[in-house]
Image (tube, rainbow, N blue to C red; front, side, top):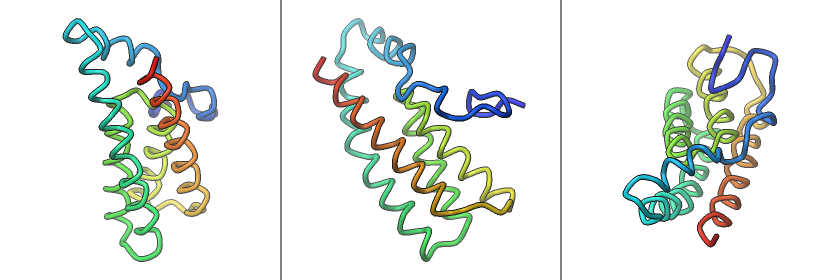
Length: 128
C-alpha cells in the first residue's frame, strides 16, 4: 500500500528532506528563481507558526482540529517538496482521522524534527 510516497514497511528516512525534482520544477516556472525564492520565503515564514499550532492543539484541541492543522502543514510541505515533513504530517493526520492508537508526542516530535530539517535545507537552497 502506498501513502505519501512510501511503500508499506518503509520509513520516512528513505525520502529526501526536500525533493530535488520539486525544486527543479519550481525553479523552471517563470524562467527564473523568483517564484522559487518566494515559495521558500513563505515556507520558512509559515512553518514555525504551523508547528506552534500543532503543538498547542496536542494539549487542548480536539482530534479533528489537530488533523486539520497537520493537513495544513502537509500542504505547505508539498508546495516545496519537503517529503519527510509531508510524510510525518500525513501520518499524524491519518492516525487522528482513523482513530488508531498512537504516541501523540512521538508523532508531533517527528513533525517538528522533519519540518525544522526542511527549513534548514530550504534556507540553504535560498542562498545557493
